[in-house]
Image (tube, rainbow, N blue to C red):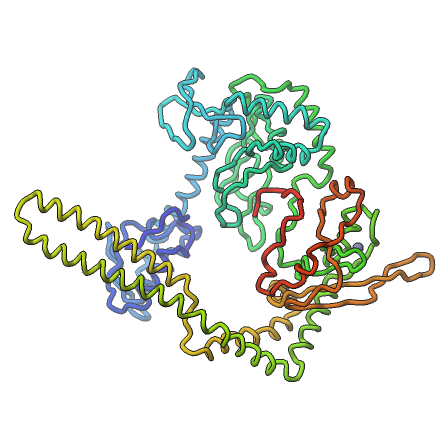
Length: 595
Ligand SMILES: [Zn+2]
């Protein structure tokens, strides 16, 4: 039996369906495939896709059995019956259309709710809770998180929650008029007040993690911009979905701007005029004048950068955190520049040009330089030979660490077999139980023994998983290392493949130190690159790296005196494997809770 759960029917590659196809391809003994209805096989965007899939199965000699018809296998070269094909086309077209109809129905229902100021689903923002109201707008009762109620004529509304949260909102709104959001966030963090979603789990880029409980500037402005503060509900800030999307006049078809790269539907911001706003079912929490004043203030503060995310794509930054300005010891930051990028002195950037100099280097050029240096080293005579000797030494030294792990596994394994045989013995003895009481006793005993055996089994599995992979001979391990090594030149040649280069630099722990000196050019004085030092592995850094705070405001407060690095040597003596781990925090507050 193959079931796909919570997957769109228009996806023609789904886990269970793929598994089914695989089995049919490889198991010649399968003769029949039972499918209740065609829409359980697919709800394709194009009806022909569904037909093609059926033909694929039938041409492999499979008989398809639906609840109302049986389709025999197709012999090679046999032409499909026209009537049968037309029926299949119509059925797949109808089943695909189901998704259009559903999208339309959902949107109509949500618009209907939004126009009356009711909740359209989701969790309410900070300071608000869900309540059940009847047809006359009377509050019936508060609702639990995630509680679903289906009751005729009743709806869910968001209403102001606990007074404690509302007080905090009022405090944030009044402070924000004279203080930037990140300072308020810092203050709240210092007071130990947990942030709105503290304690919840959140998924970023597919990775589940606990919300840190810290305030960020975005949390603060998000609260201040919440239209619910002036008792207005707004629905449809964003439009998403692949069949229909929201417009002020109801559901609409997707247009070209709704598709992103690779023709995939993307989430778009609806313009203000397309959003549905309504009067909420309560009085404003803060004065409307104050909120409007604040909106204008926040808009001017945000400038042109509002809502634009920082690039989170590390693939475009091969030397990120690996280039340093020798003049000040700061890392050089990636600055995008008309299609390409530069690395510019971080101290110069963060102090708005007050300190250090406008030292920069072309990003691709620096990358090519580092690659050339690595290639040169890899091709040096006797380099490989020296490395093999060194690895063999290391392997001999580490060979003694293996047995300890394996004895623990052995001990656990014998414990498991002991417990299992005891279980078998007791269950055999149970045959001789002569009264209901003794049967009960046996059962209790068996339960205990079983849970003990289960525990041993789980512990054994954990031990085996944690143990270093056993190598038949030390040579195998050396070969594995050399395979890795032999990949390096290939990585170092792919000058355009930035992710591969990033990986190469990470594995080798490449660090690039640049020295600049002024040079007079007609009227201006420019800083030209004079010298570069490239280190790999655990080489000591030639300069003291700057390790103080890097935030702009902090720099202003400390009048920019660069603290001498105290652990620069340590930073430079990390082993390549550790280079992905971060150093201790620089004392900057995170911008967002994203990971
Ligand atoms: Zn500098």
